[in-house]
Image 1 (tube, protein in one colour):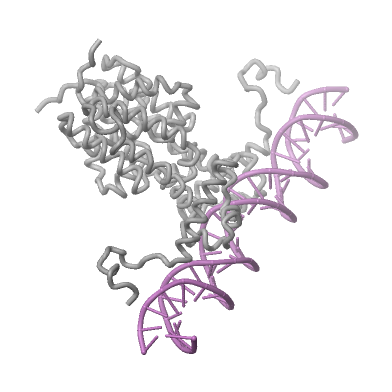
Image 2 (cartoon, each protein chain N blue to C red; image 1 turned 90 degrees about the vertical axis):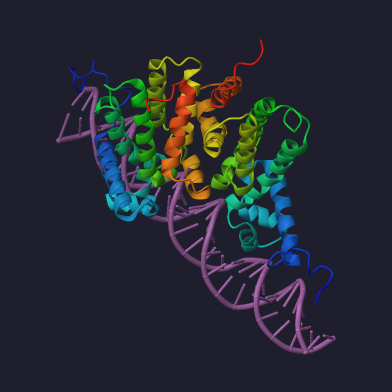
Length: 203
Length: 203
DNA sequence: GAGCCAAACGGACCGCGGTCCGTTTTCATT
DNA sequence: AATGAAAACGGACCGCGGTCCGTTTGGCTC
């Protein structure tokens, strides 16, 4: 028996072998470096493998696909953002009233999405709605809607608020329609107002 | 001079050469056949070229990319749908009151999107928001909103209604969240009601 | 009809994502 | 320390999207 004291602790079905964990770290690290030094386009599976000093097959074993790797890189930045929603300063974090938190959420999410735009695009289907990222946002919005006393199908209404903040829609509006970020934001707040039934705030 | 009588007619800057037009037709036709006989995945640029009896380069010359080709194939079906919105029978077509037309639009658009789901995915960025498809839908919704007397930033509100009907969002909701189509539809109608300020209809 | 040029053609070629399989490493057991 | 099997590794290999460039063709002019 390896370590009786650790057995009862939740180490899940099967832990990761030492070399595997080491390589995962090295790869993730190499990928992040490549992204920030040469841009997403330069992040080739072979390049990452080489930079991490492992074989190409290993990259795929660890991350399944290029999209998977990108999602993993993205997840890194995403986690920090989630933390600021959960426990950062108000109005984004807890403390402010739900309506203000909702507005702050919209603005923050829009900005964050735009900052990581090409990473999200490269992460494809795993980009937004990856288990982590999307469902966290959906849950948060659902909670805020509940706190605002909104009634209806909250998961669906949450989606209605999140959908216009997704990359494909933003790309369309910013690049084809020629709307600017300010306008999108104002539009989103109006949408939030209509969905929540919030009366137009002061002034 | 080729044909003085035709000259004044708008033949645009430069017309397409005869062989080019012939090949475009053959390619589009071959692509459509491949799609319906073997599914989108089997539609390889080389396969299409071979099926149409032309070289691979020609496919790219005509459609730029695989996504472009897919968008062209999609456009074919899409046009029929647009026609039924413009001049089909009510409530989707003209004749019904705007609110009923909006509801019919939502349902119809959702169905149509799901039917062509994998084609749309394969068409990538050109899938939905291709010049034709997306902006037509946006325009139509804008008109209906205007007819309903909705005030606000109509182009933005129209997007808010269309975004939840886009493939990435639908995929998420249907496949990850496990919502069914009925629920999505009901949710969309509720959203439309909130956005337009429509009071809950009869009964 | 002959001649000319822009446009179109075709297929060899390239790079990258993804797979496969023979070899190496880890680690629990004794 | 020795052992054995599961897991991980690595890189040759494959298929497809996309490009390039030498060749062919269409259609206008004279």
